[in-house]
Every structure is written in C-alpha cells, then in structure tokens.
Image 1 (cartoon, rainbow, N blue to C red):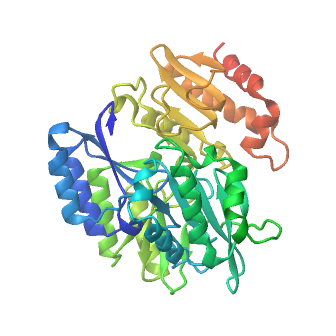
Image 2: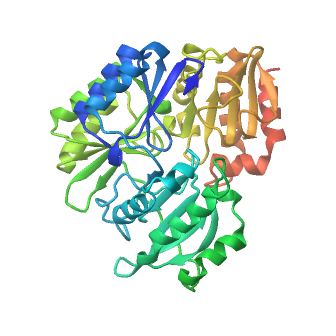
Image 3: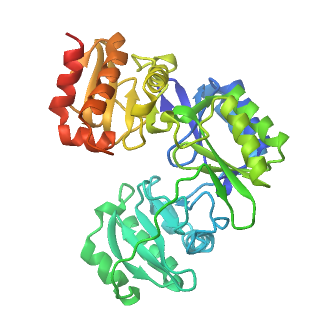
Length: 422
C-alpha cells in the first residue's frame, strides 16, 4: 500500500500470535528495509512503514522466512480466544468452520478485500468497537450458547451453533453477488432474512456480559496475560526489539496481537506478568488503562509523512503529559498531521488537524470535519489547558469529560479556546 512515507506492509500473523523471536525479526526487517516504524493497528494487525519499491520483494521473503501470514477472507476473533475464562463459547472452531466453508476459491475470490467477519466468544476482550460486515457474538450460557448475528451492523437474529457457519456462508454469498465493492451494509434486508429464515431462532435479542477492563488478565489455564500498548499505536524497531528481549527474560513465549494497538504477553504466572509489565513501562509502553496516552490517536505527522504539517505524536505526547487528569478515558482525542485522518478515520470528541496555516480544532467530528476554530501550532498546549480548566470548572459531580462537553456543546468549547487566545 502506497503512503506518503513510502510503501506500507500490513501483516496478519496466523492466529494473531507472534513470538518474541519473530517480533524481533520483524523489527530487524523494518529497520533494514523501511524507516524502522512499526505499528499495531486498532484491529490488531502489524504494519511496517516506509518501504521502498525496490526492496518489497526482499522484505516479503524475509517476513515469510520467520512468520506465517494469513491471507484471504479476514475472520477475526478475540486475541484470547480459547484462553479467556469469561468466554461464553470458544470462537475458534466456528471461525475455522467459516474459513473452510469459503475456501473453495470461488466465493472467496468474489468478495472484496475489505470484507470482514468477526466471531466474538463474549469474553473479557471483545471486538465490539471494530466494524464488521458480518458479526457473530456468543450469547446465553456456556452450557447452551447461541450466536447473535449482525450483518452490516444490523441485528439479524439468533442462531444455533450448528447453523452459524452456514448462515455466514449464505450472507457472504449475497455480499459476493453485489460485486467486488459489495459490503454487508449494502444488502437488502428482506432478501437476507428470506435466505436465513429457516435457521433463525425465535427469541428476544440477547447481549453478552459486560467487558472487563484489566491490565493483567487471569487466563482459564492458570497463566496470566499482560497487556502492553504502543503509545499512539507505534514504536520504532529498537524499542520493539527491547520489548522482545524483556519478554524472553521472563520466559514469555508468545504475544497475542490485540485491538487498540496492544500486545498481550502470555505469562506463566502473575508474578511474571508484573515483572514484564514493569520492564515494558520502562521502555515507554502503555501498561495501565489509566495511562492518558491510551485515549489518544496520532499519526506520525511531519516527522515521517510528506502530508503531515505538524509532529502529531510529539504534540499528543506533550498534551497528555501536561493534562493527564483530563484524559479520563471517556473520550477520544485525535491529533492528525493533515486532513486525511489516517490514525482515526471516524469522529472523535476532539480532533486537532494540522494544516499549512496552523491547527484546526474539530469538535465531535473527524479530521475531515468542519473546524470550530483555527489556531497557531504553538497555541495548542494552551488550548488544551483551557479545555481542561473548562471541564474542572463546569462539570457536575462525577461527570466525565465526554458528558460535560456534550452538554456544553461545540460553541462553548470553541469560545473557551478563543478566549484563551485573547
């Protein structure tokens, strides 16, 4: 994929699992053939940036020699599928049945490359926030699980376990019939229902248990998972290599790639997980859900992209260090080097967008949205300070930043920033 800092390679290791040795090898290849920047995406894929066209083949050969990469239809499960004691059902057998059902070539070849299936076992780490053309979510009890089906974001009905793979195959066939650009959201709801009516189970909609927010996770087999996040979704090759070394030092054999730019290290004991988390924190990784950097999306900006007009990650780092209390986990801040908004394509409560004349502030919108106001680049820290003060002054008892700002509205937010510039 061509980007403004060179070619980008997106990697899906088989099962979303990568060993410390493999992670270090990917880091070495990124340093050798790219610009040394590696990302874990919001969906939990690896990305290597800054590749030159003349080295792509050699880079691909190097990757294939150390890591098995998935191809074909994207079928996503929890990063802890089969290990999560909170799961209603292990999603892996169903995901494999779907993969085999479409592996005859004709159906898979007819689907567009962005078509995605999510099979969510209902555990502590879900896939709720990730868009999917088809989503199956385990509901009910572990003794008698069923699968809630969504197509194109719309609830379709309940399925027995033995019917779930066939229902996905039928829905994918309808999507394929729309052509290479067809997506689940484009399907005619009546046609979909008619195709699935014989196997849909009557009953009220059901929902999985609430997700758990944990930095270290007790696994069903007695081991512990330690979640570490890449600040703003990225790290350089040397830092990732150091993380791999720290993992091996405590006997960690595998990382599971996870949503929201995380790696989950599978540790033998809770004590090992704590030791690894401490080492990862020293290296600059996010090791607690209270870290304000976890609420911020930022691209590489002008430090590595021709389209970037501000050093977006450096700006984000400055803001989170200056006002950590403000980043209470209730909202997303997006700092974008330009209006393309690559790091967070959707809307955020607050978006800062670099341009040739300074920085735009967009409230409750995306980087492409209409700005509430424009400011000089060096005014951004003061603007954030004013917004943090606004929240502290105007919040009701226990009110989060998101609730407070939505109550006050975009005009008040813009006026507060404008006042700080006068």
